[in-house]
Length: 139
Image 1 (cartoon, helix red, strand yellow):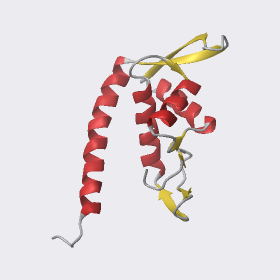
Image 2 (cartoon, rainbow, N blue to C red; image 1 turned 180 degrees about the vertical axis):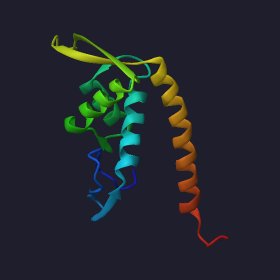
Image 3 (spheres, rainbow, N blue to C red; image 1 turned 120 degrees about the horizontal axis):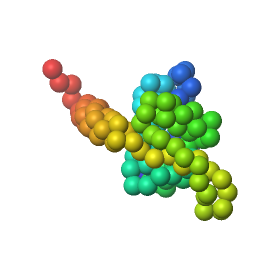
Image 4 (spheres, helix red, strand yellow; image 1 turned 60 degrees about the vertical axis):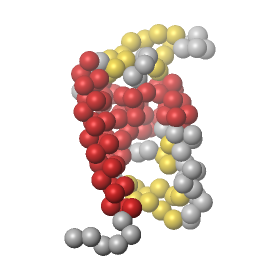
């Protein structure tokens, strides 16, 4: 790990700072970048099977080794937003604990959106990584 113990995701529409516990510094987040990242992670979580909200949050926490924690106040508005855009569908079912839960499934439009945005994300992160790797000024 890079010293980040956790990084809560938020898409509240405001820039917020997130503590970096081991470094004692803060990182400013762009709300549009955070929202796009959140949406991408949710869509990826639904790639293989339908999941309820807790299952989405748990998947994200597991695959990021606990670096990203998805809070309910962020997750459910994002799921509703994705549903409204037709990127996910939902239906009620029973959870592993035999409780009623809403399950979300990736739609065909969601699959296309995930592919396009994943490619865009890769180009973006590659460009940022190249810039950050420079040890001497260029240009």
